[in-house]
Length: 228
Image (tube, rainbow, N blue to C red; front, side):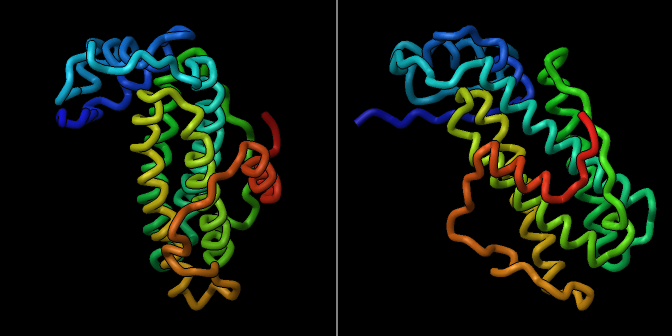
């Protein structure tokens, strides 16, 4: 029995860029070779390139751009939310620390996607977070909703991405999952939160997969987005 193929993403940003630049109809072998040559983004062991199956991806580079711009929209939203909360400085307890740490992560995610998309990146909308960035109880509730939505959004679109782009996106969604668990733990322990999220830090054995429409509905229900 031959050794399994292992793929290690060494430079996710380069892998993401190479995936976005792939032409429609690129085969699996061609795309993986392209990514490996372009800056050492992917290391493959156990099989030569010629041994990879020549199957065309159902996903495409153009679809990657659409999905990553949707992810960028969510990162704009989260980065702006946590940055405003941090700047206003009115949160108390662990919620304040959460805003500082996660805000830095979300700004990094935002910048990462903007750089990868380049001229194809969308502009940030305007947001109005009202008192959710100054009242700790409302901040926690909003953060739970945003982080759960982010995880579901990334998971829901993962199957529609080309493989190199999916590998790069996975480095974001795993961190988003940590954020979701952390803020849910804060909500469970905070005496300020009346309606605590069900299920604690890890409510599901399998996270939900949200469609684009479901994500839009969840985001629109917050009333945070004011213009494109």
